[in-house]
Each structure stands twice: as C-alpha cells, then as structure tokens.
Image (tube, rainbow, N blue to C red; front, side, top):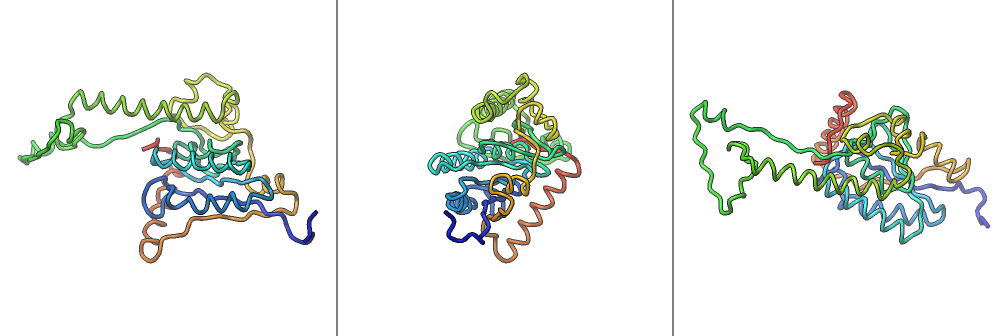
Length: 264
C-alpha cells in the first residue's frame, strides 16, 4: 500500500559515460563504488537498476572489476539490472553492459568490439639513422620487453600475442556467461573484435532489444515513474576541467570516426 499516492515511482539510473581507466575523471571502480552502492540501495523498492552506458572502452581490469562488483550487488540484493547503450557501448563498454540481466540499445548504437588491442611504436631505426645512441640498463632479461627504442624481439611479439589471447579468452567467457543461449550466430561473427550497429547486435543476440532510458523507466516503474540519475563525484578545480575535456574529446573521436578501440 502506497502511503503517499501523490509520489512518483523512482527508477535509479547509473550513468557510465567516458573512457574506462584507473585515472581521475574516468570510469573506474574507485570512482563508481559509491554510486553503484547508492543505486542498489535506491532500487530496493522498485527492484530495478538501469545502467546508462556511453563508453568506447578502455582498461580490461577496470571493466572486469566494475562488472563483477555490479553482479555481486545484484545477487545480494535481488535487483534486476538493465543496461541501455547510447551512442556507443563497445569493447570495455560492452563488457560493462554484460553485467546487466538485459541489454538494450538504439538501432544505430555502436555495439560489440569483443576483442583486445595494444600497440606502440618502433623507433630503433629512427634513432640509429640520426646517430642517437640508446643506453638502457635492466636487471631481468625481459624487463625492457616491447621497449620502443630497441628492435622487436620475436619472443616479445609471441609473448604479447599470448597475453592478448588470454585476455580475449576471458572477455569471450564473460560474454558467454552473461548472454548464454541468447547468442544466435557463429562465434566467429561475434568474437572477431568487430563492432556493429544496435540493429545488427540484436540479430546476433548481443542485446535484447531496442529502447531508450525514458521508455524503460516507464515500462519498469509505470507511466508516472521518473529516473533518478546517479553520477560519481566529479573531480575538483582544474582537474575537473582537464578530465572532462579529455573524456568528451575521446567520445567525439569515437562518434565521428565510428572507431571503437578494444580493451587496453
């Protein structure tokens, strides 16, 4: 029985917007622990928590830390978690989406990119051409592995590929665990690292449907329901301006080029 019939039902919406990285102003477990806990606390009545995802990815470790934390809270509280991808929810952004029980997106959202990427530059020939002598001292034969001013060793390339395959295997296992039988296509079409539209992602079972936050709030809480937006505490002073500019610039690049980097 509702003692206050004039009050409107509330659905908490956790905003996950930006690059995933262990730096101030980015998406990471340190910044999001309090908002996640607050979201599940507010969801005790409605039993629903929405994740508003707007991220092209980033750190594999932070993606996993946040995803596992959300799942633990969901199991403990019995709250249903629903992810909604906006312009982009790919690579680490899709990893976060898989923490939800159901995933929705716009038909033109960028989704997927289930792969892992790393890279750098090889400047050994450049410095040799300009007569620059590199002086490097290490203890441990692999301490300078992939050092950009030294020639690439075959064993380093092999090590890096093995490391990427290991991380990719964990990503695929997470998607299989969370999406299960909803995946409708051959895995070679899903786990090749490519990204796709929300419409295509729905066909392949990477998402459950096409919807936006407002629609889902009304479906889950009733016609009078309203969202309660949850954000991490913003950085202060100059750091706030710097991190905000960096995040927005990165998202602009992702949107304009329709390029989604893999987990890093």
